[in-house]
Length: 169
Length: 338
Image (tube, rainbow over all chains, first blue to last red; front, side, top):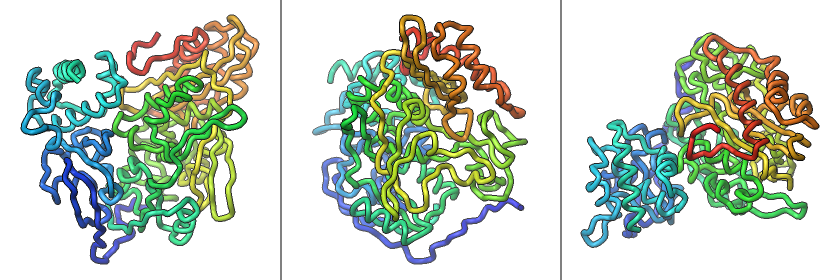
């Protein structure tokens, strides 16, 4: 049988939009989105929060990492409609009253990036890591940050930055 | 990703009802595997039934000393649950060996069981794949099959089940509780996943419209002599080439009872009770372990790019049994293999 590359079901109905009410970076937010809108696309395309990056869009690179109810998740593999009522924090929501989050400052202090594309995901992931409280040693930081790829390979500086922030939090 | 309808299930019975009403619907919980497959058009559900808010998120002790794990308990919560780390550390270790911290925060217990193979051809919709498109053929048998199976394969499919957690659940002899249109039932873990045979499109023995509600562990947790040893191309965040979960009951240096299972080798976590039986009553040493490994791998069959897995499996079994017998389980953060 010849291989198929066809989408077998095409829904030709107009997108059925669903109301999502959630708190994004502390602000109550209402949004009408089609069910197939990922949280990542909702943030970037509907709320203009472009700090969260789209890398692989398949949960493999970690660039899209945000905090949902305080837990780090891949926003590319999360449907916005499923997060109705949730509290979402992105890189734009980490600074308080104009003061950088300790992780943001630590990434600057340690030059923990080159191109910077993975950085928002790295920082949100590190914020989740610190909240989880499971990583104490550099080995543990490396292991529990392995969902965030840095193709510039700034890993040693990222580990150092996280260690600094852990010390201050 | 194709367009789809979205609905929430109000309770578990409602989830079953909604699924029964739409044969092309799918349940979504964590979504980490399903949305990935939908983005590649491997899965094309007409409707997603959101079960993520159902009350299946508790870990409870059972009256016979075991543990009942709700199907929606996230993988990370389960791995770090005090009752798991104290009584079933092999399970916690296996979970932490898989995926990334973000994915473990999202992925559910039931979803981990139901995740699909990562065979390249299953994901690649322009090539034949009997699992994705029954009757179209298997591209892996003569293709890039480095990550594929060496045990229990068929002419129709040589895919492997990708879970780490399930390898530990096989050793622990968990039960899977499900609910369907005709009521609730429990499936013993060895019968939950299937071998590919000539129906590789079916990964499990779940019937149509059944939903996983819980995974139950018996009391025996092998919390002294255990390990989960995973060998892969990267030190973290990669699927197993070979993994071995071991639980032993030791009496000095004598093995009183042995169980072990392999991941990365077959369409389901692979146990061989004859090989386990060959360890019982024996002194824990390399010779004993080699004999058990030979029994497991006697019928192993490699393909062009994965024959190395047979020897790798032999050495991983011996190393894992050694770790478990010594009571020095593999660390999942310091990757040095002791």
